[in-house]
Image (cartoon, rainbow, N blue to C red; front, side, top):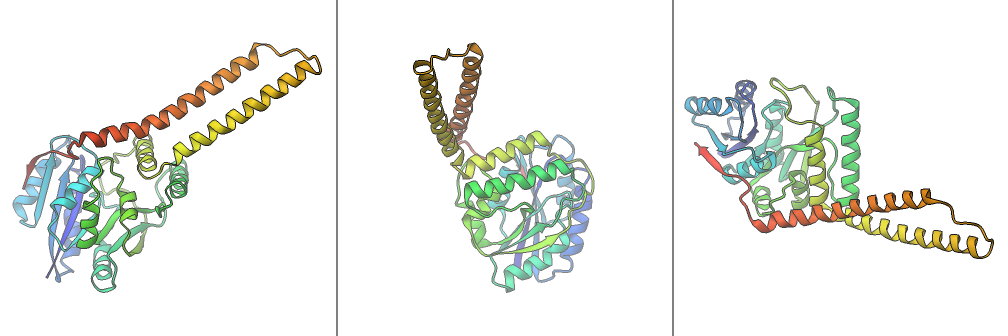
Length: 308
């Protein structure tokens, strides 16, 4: 009998966890061919999430949990779950039921009998989200694909079932700055996509706002692409050429035609423009240096305060 580990990152999910557990157990009852393991990762929750997980463990020996000492982020929680998982197949899914448990049997059939190493859910739409957020998300993934030359489409999330071979490949990527969508694409393996409709959270509130999504997007770009540095270099070359042409034109206008050089407005605008470009380029370089700095420290991705 194959063992199936379901990894569930949790951050302030006390309201939805009982509902999630009930729905997943209902689906697992229809999968007698697998031995289930529910592995919850409490990512430093500030509510009663850990108490709920203790209660689930007390009533179900197939439930396990790891509790972080503080909030380390979802990427660290997924990595910790994959490290602790003992299953022949591993699933990563959210506790808010936006990842439909009903897809689990189809995923298992794909990785068990159809020759795939991974079967992932693909969100067909963004119902319930604002038009602006949907537009920005689609634009981000298009830009990221162009920059990284890897397939990371809008709608392809973390919800997926993987073979032990793929899990081991992901664990072999030891970097501190982790962007799991990029790592899934980086390690490769044959993936089958199962479409599903976007739904509202079953309970609780989303932990993602525009600020956190913006930082997440930057992590994705700087973790899997050096294109920003290339763009900065191209901008520098273009500005240098334009400045030479402007200087040459001004010199010809003054020496040959006797025109006076215009006042301070042009100079001030050029100084502000070039200063802004320099700061932008410095920020791009600094972002890569800061990531290298964090990698060199070799700090742990997470610290566990309690496990069961």
